[in-house]
Image (cartoon, rainbow, N blue to C red; front, side, top):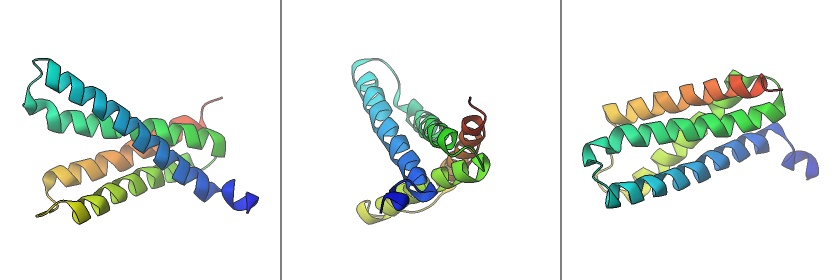
Length: 125
């Protein structure tokens, strides 16, 4: 059991969880700013993509710094799992859910952010 908890797969899930926690924190901060400042609603889509990318980048950097190898693959997996979970939950909870160009941008940016974070993490000393 201990081997499984310390395995590469658990670390990848840990990176995904770190990314989700960061996303919730950053989205809460953005929601407060959106509510109490004059920030326009037209900023919602780009800010959400940026928050998602930054969260995945940080989560994958932390985990791949522990794994020390295959950063681009492991980081990409963290981004992919993160995105798949978002779309799985969205399809279950949002009526009329569909994939569109915005979805494609989020998927691609999430995976690329994970890959970049993975490379950064592996090269941290």
